[in-house]
Image 1 (tube, one colour):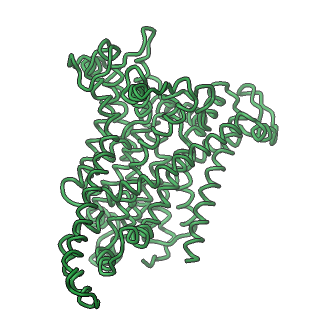
Image 2 (cartoon, rainbow over the protein chains, first blue to last red; image 1 turned 180 degrees about the vertical axis):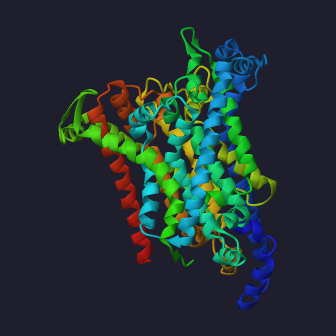
Image 3 (cartoon, rainbow over the protein chains, first blue to last red; image 1 turned 60 degrees about the vertical axis):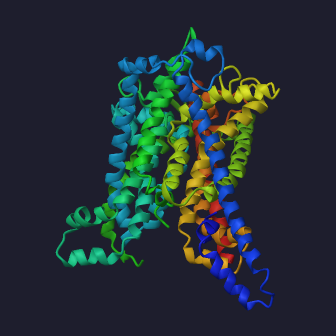
Length: 308
Length: 288
């Protein structure tokens, strides 16, 4: 759609010019131009309509969950409606009033933040090395890192459990944070390397000539230059750590249990507590929306993994 | 960019190496260790060589799971890649509409996977879910918990809903990188919409599409949480994919040896498919 959208204003002169060269009579000129314009407008509208339909389909399941979270269980089971008849915040009150519930969110946020910090701290220097220097085994190292992204978490389930139990880290936030480094650190290195390669070498050299030491240059000059890259990397680390449950659930039992594992409590002998489940689900979506809101202007570049 | 030869750069990579090695090499060695031994308890174990591998290779349940897994991965790739491209082409490029649609499209990617399962578990139920109720209205006796075909459709639909945004965002960022000059040239040539797509946009999307296909293949091949919450692998074993078979074997039955052998074969399949795909694409690009 991009073509037509931006072309609407410039299409006219181009078409006229090329028509002058052709041997056709001048009469059909006007219809040709308006025809092209109509076509362009139609394409824009097709795009808008298509996008709207897609977004509606995309948001419908989420809306349904949101709708359900404001209903009582009796209302949910008694029939379908697009709006809650007896609007209630009871489900949310239950979650915020019970530490065993809301601590799940706190635990998740703690290990996700830890993972973000660890991933960025170790990935920043490594990405710099990959983007600036040649060294023995650099390519192999890079591919080995990426191959970890291809390891199914299910494969590591039992070994992880034993490893972290044996070093006394079982059921701690740091255990989950470290386990998530398995896929987040390689990803962070990959994205940051892309962004860093976009910064010209001359900047490094000038700084060194000016007498900056490497750490001082890195912190004072280089990091501010790739701010948006760091933001985007943090976003990706957040995303993959926040949504992962299999490892997080296996490595925790009480003290660091993530919200995803606590949600299964809504299944009880008296049947499913649908309203509570929906409310808990909605609350897990909110942090994601906040994070993507902060990086919205960089997301397009971030998804190209810095390599555009 | 020319890079300087400097082996001291290893010091900068060392932290990454240590942290990933701790989470990757030690567990992987444990798996290798298990895969060649028969373990009764922590003190009694026998070396069995390749016996577990032979058992895994001839296990018909695993063959079925593998077949289902490939079928699933190819189905969702066939749907998600074209749909993702289409969405990326439709996304507005400027103004408030652009950032709004970016945020909205990204939402499914940020939902924890078990919640994705929960959303569709609710959405697909005929009694309390909109989708299930609509199917019932259409006269289809829709029930993903008892009909294998319906379970499959729901799992595929869920995955398409969940992951098409990733492909769309990848393509969107690829499209943003095309210089305006290309489009101007196309306009002068009076290129058709299709020609613009085929000869300008698609070639520029190749790189992001390679990443997209690889990511989607790997992740769909490892899928566990979403179908586990939605169908629990059922009805029967119709939606039991590889990860779930593995977890059942390792945690459920505690068959450590065969489970470890299975893990290694599983990991190797993913590596192999990704490698074959990547090298084929690279060869094709070189030929051009």
